[in-house]
Image (tube, rainbow, N blue to C red):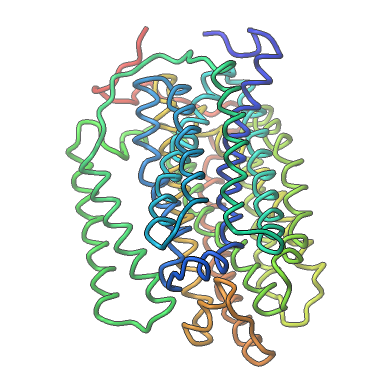
Length: 493
């Protein structure tokens, strides 16, 4: 199969541009919405304990559907599913901009999440189909640039829109970008991967979804209420459902999370590194915004500008991280990237109510350099280890593990950070509806420190997982395994 470069640099560049735009607009929506939460809450009269689901609901849908929609890409064409994701995302954004109450904004965000899941689950597989193995790391590096640019735009546009315009514009801006990208995608992207017969795991998806929902519901309630029987009940029910999910997956012909993929050398530590990195890192932006706005009293726009250098540097570093992975193997840039992120987290844990702001901005640059090394290298490791007929499953598995980490990072960090002041005050700060005085600011900063130390420990676990792959990368490329997928899936000749 020829890669995109053999069909001309122009088409190859346009194909990569479309993929990067898809990652960009989904990244925008992971950062921009948090800055608009106060306005959404006030405009639509949403309760504080419900508005958090505008973010968590979006992430939860992407988490649940990542493997299933990647599987649809294997069945019906990854490009076709990727383009369908663009369309659904645009429609979901349009409807979010028109939302009129709590149920509508959360429901339309769930629809938007379906589109984001289609884009996220198939983007890595489209790159794997489009570029040859020795060029994929570079392509994933540009994908990381798209993520960082999207995060930059999300933070900057979020600050500008919240300050000067209606919150509805955070969704309106996705519509023209998504439509332009969809038109380009229809013209330049072509399916080149072999079609595979897959089965969707409905029972596994439902039990995993309900299990994660139960735990997340309990955790989010814990941010605004004291521990009670209802919260315990939700968490316990969620855990029971997750156990049921594990049992169901062992007996499914084609499970949602195919444990057989862990037989592929390097796959287990690479996926676990993505999980723990997500657990450690996704909450960082929100914790820093809580610190800058709630403790230090900065406006959303000013706070976003302080984080801008990190996103810019991270965008520049991404392609170099991908090239290093192509040249020396994925383990070195991935592991070093995780260590740099740990350094940044340690610095955050030292911030006080009067710390020099340049320290925070500098640490954010260090963390962004680490992210720029980790993401393209880790993505390349997963796709290099996956057999050619299973790029969709591997890409979906990677997104599922990373997204589970992201969802729980968000909830766990808020619970830990809110442990030093009253739940209602902490949650009001989180959604931007309140600021703290000096005394409470000092107490809440201590809570944020605890959350950052939790992240340091989780990032250390991710680094250890990544480093265990060293034995596979000493003077050779990451191995692949012909034994996956087992029996039920056979790549076409």
